[in-house]
View 1 (cartoon, rainbow, N blue to C red):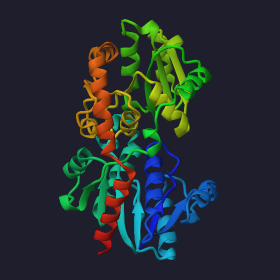
View 2 (cartoon, rainbow, N blue to C red):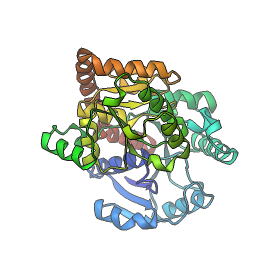
View 3 (tube, one colour):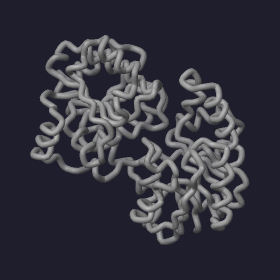
View 4 (cartoon, rainbow, N blue to C red):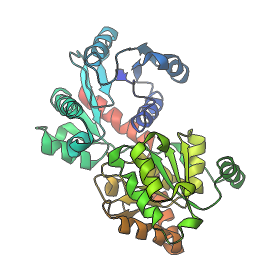
Length: 364
């Protein structure tokens, strides 16, 4: 099967992890011939890492041009099936069409976006729902949100949970953990947040809850992913709450160091108001670290009872949950055990297998 895929977001947060792992798994299937459409700067790296044909596409993301240039290239390459791993499905494709819609944040929280961004997202998601042959979503929550908003036959949408990269199942190595702590001046037990700092991630709740911990002076709060220094409002809140000296901002880490950040953490927290899946939670569970997730959108579905849920609108509830995990060793042990089991149910191999089933169904 000759499959074309738009991989111009392969180094973005979240969706980039999805694209890279899906590609790696699909390439293990001898029945797949892959043609990738990539940003010019990424072409050489992708050619080095993958055996697929890689074609440069210079069109900016979220532009009018991309809706026609990618399809023109796919048609010229004579792909049998085109997979858009994001809701921006090109126009005028001659092949069969599969699209992955990871979340509905633009529809559920329009206040976080400009009128142009909202209109673009609504128009493109509607186009994806009506013009694709099949839609893949990361969670049943996203499936239900799409069905509520767009006239789509339920059988056209397939939920395929994301996976956990094998590196996060690695055994703890005390020496490496000690070196990691020393490198980043981590001197106390710490609470970890990893990911972007967009408004819907609700990271301010975590800052406020941390500031109210009884033993806050004996703990540190660590961020990985998007840099805290780049978010003005969050920096103001950190100063207002007086926790600057307790905070460490590591920025984006390679997976080998992210693994150590997870392993060394007392717990990992995702206070997000909207998630299509929540990769950081399943990665943390795989490392054997307790996770706390907002009781919102897809997070309870993804945790499957393996994490501690809290009200994403209540500072007191998150503070209480953090203190419970800190003080209750039986709870910690239970969360670790359940998290390990849950994370083993989620694999990129299974994700790719189910994606291939969608491809085969569409091609017929």
